[in-house]
Length: 104
Image 1 (cartoon, rainbow, N blue to C red):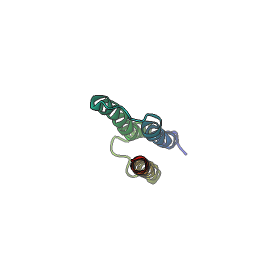
Image 2 (image 1 turned 45 degrees about the vertical axis):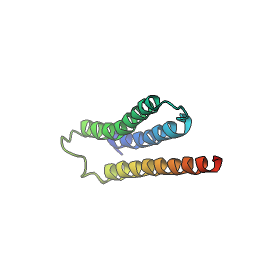
Image 3 (image 1 turned 180 degrees about the horizontal axis):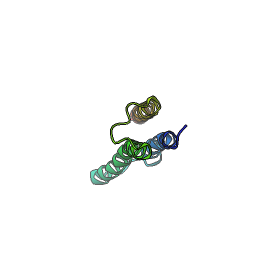
Image 4 (image 1 turned 90 degrees about the vertical axis):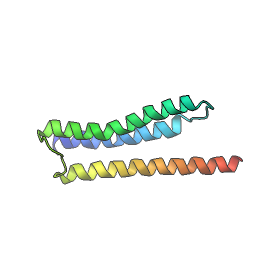
């Protein structure tokens, strides 16, 4: 395993941590829409920065100026990490909706 592949492998769980912190540990129970929007934008930028960092670091470390789409390891880790992240987003969102319906 090369250093570039190791970096990509380490950054995938970082994206999951950002999703978990954004949705579980920072509940948006405030009434202010501006605060909700600001916190949501910060976590959206954090969430989007991990895949961008993965691509940039992989291209920099391997010396490939084009897309790293020819490496099956990169594609597998990249897509699997994003699919798990989106799954976590949906699961936590549906869990919050179900929890809110029980309290009403």
